Length: 397
Ligand code: FAS
Ligand code: PHB
Image (cartoon, protein in one colour):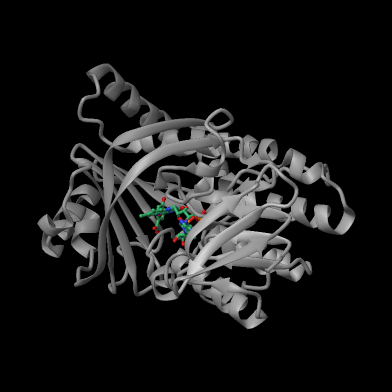
C-alpha cells in the first residue's frame, strides 16, 4: 500500500491533520492503536481558543461546535474563597474562548473522517516507523494478526506522549526538557448544572480547584491531589466536600452535587521534545509537548502545530516546496515555549507546593495580589489565556 502521509494516532492532532489534508486532496491513512469506542470515550480538555475554533470550522467540522459550544467572555479567580473576575473580552479587545469538550471534537472529527471514506484504521497494533531519514519512509502495523506495510512520503507522529513516533528520533538528535509537578489533578464529571456560568480557578491553603463544564447541565471539576492518589479512596461525597471548601462559602452554598460519570487522576507535567521534525517524520501535539492543564492549552497547542504542519505538507505536495517542512519545527517551537511559559506560570501561581519555602509562598501570594490590582497583569493573563496571536510562518499577513 502507498499513500502520501501516514498519520500515527487518532487524537485531535491526527484527526484534524487528516481532515485538513484530505480537504486539500492529499492522500492519508490514520493508524490508531485503540478502538473507536475507547478513543471516543476519553474525557480530556474542555476549553478551545478562538484560533482552534476557527481551524475546526475551516476543516468543515464546526457545525455542532458552533451550535453547542459555550462562548465564555471571562472566568473567575478565587483566592481563599473570594472571587475576582478576569474580563477576557474587555482585556483583549473582544476575544473569547469556547467551552466544548475534546470528547466532542474527537467525535466530530471521526465522523467527518468516516464520512470522507479516507482510511482510519482502529486497533492498528505495533505500528513501526522505517527509513524516516529517507524520502521514502515506511510504516508497518498489524491488524487481526496480519502485518501491513504502507509506503509514504511523510509520517505525522500524532500519537501523544506515550506514542512511538518520538522514540523514532535518534537519541543523538532528540533533546527533551521536562518539569514534573509534585501533584496531580483528580477530576470528576457529573450531570449537574455548573456552580457558575463561567470557569472558576481557585487557590486555597489546601490546594487548587477548578470548576469547569461541558454544557449547562454537565459539570467538570478538578482538585489538586497528591501524585499517589487512588480514585478508590475518593467517594463522590468526599470530592464534593473538598470542592465546596476550596471554592468558598458562596459557591459551596449553590454547588450542585450528584453521582459521578467519570473520576480520574492525571499527573501534571511540562515537557518539550526538540526538534519536532526528523527527516520525513513530523511530531505534532502531545507527541512533542505536554503542558500542565491549568492554562487549558494542550489541545489548543496541538491544533496550532497541525495548522502549521498542514500548510507545510500542502506546499510540499502541491507546490513542490520544502520551505514549510524545513521551517516546521522552529515555527512550532516558537509558540510551544511561550505556551509552556504561561502554563507553568499559571500552574505555579495557583497550586500549593508543600515543600515550598515560606519566601516563595509569600512571593506567589504577592503575585496574585498584584494580578488583582494591575490591569497590565490581567491583560497579560487574558491575552495568553484566549490564545496568543498566530504567527504565520509563511510570512503571510
Ligand atoms: P492524544 O494523546 O489525544 O492522542 C494520541 C492518540 O495516539 C491516542 O488516540 C492514542 O491512542 C494514539 N496512539 C498512541 N500510541 C500509538 C501507537 N503506537 N500507534 C497508534 N496510535 C497510537 N488539555 C487541555 O487543554 N485541557 C485539559 O483539561 C486536559 N486534560 C487532560 C487530561 C488527561 C488525562 C490527559 C492525558 C491530557 C489532558 N489534556 C488537556 C491534554 C490533552 O487534551 C492533549 O493536549 C490532547 O489530547 C493532545 O492531542 P493529541 O496530540 O492528538 O494526543
Ligand atoms: C476542562 O474543562 O477540562 C478544563 C478547563 C480549563 C482548564 C483545564 C481543564 O484550564
